[in-house]
Length: 281
Ligand SMILES: C[S@@+](CC[C@H](N)C(=O)[O-])C[C@H]1O[C@@H](n2cnc3c(N)ncnc32)[C@H](O)[C@@H]1O
Image (cartoon, rainbow, N blue to C red; front, side, top):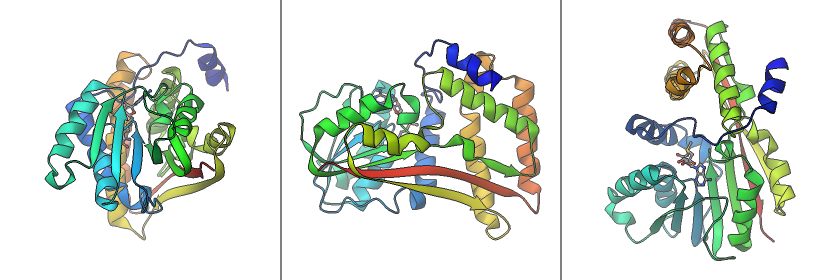
């Protein structure tokens, strides 16, 4: 509690936690494919012509959407020019998608897009990096036509659990979340999606908790998810060390603990995230 109230009083600066290195861009692509079975399982854009993807990053989710919904046209926007360039490069590799997407550099808080011009919207791991998520949702609602559906997938970082207990990993994870909060993000935004979507006027708001719970029943998936998680956590390590939010020693100790968890015959990995959908009436 003490730590949180201290953080609350700080000036929050907008700074992207994961950075824009080539390594991080590759991690985003790997992440999208690794989680595709959970993230895209309940997304249905069939009969949806014009889809807006907000915070498209490197085009990893865009590729999945174009593959799964061959009738759709996708407009992908992101604030960062490096991500935009990388998304263009990535989608260019899929010649059969040419003409089915547009990529634009744009701030989701102020969309230079016509009102009521889209039939659907997709946001994944974006609101967690934005100080006023309701502003983005309000903008997205403005550009959606009546009958359109929005899907929002977001983190709920309080849900993470790892067995065996790994104290340095916990220290690092708390620092990661504090830092994201200080950088004007929200590592717990998933739990708030119901309120946010309702507040900005969406109807039929549904939330669905998606869980990765891997133990001795799925040893291969458990191994893969721990590997994925290690990369996710490390993606912020350099920034956290530079900001003195954690130390090299804690990062090394957390990594050593992760190695131990990997070898443990009774290891458990648990993490839940939220996927919401809602409609414009
Ligand atoms: C974690 S990445 C997720 C990318 C992609 N949705 C995915 O799942 O692979 C978050 C992205 O949101 C973008 N972003 C952050 N704030 C934004 C804003 N205000 N407007 C548009 N994009 C933003 C970042 O540049 C980054 O590419």
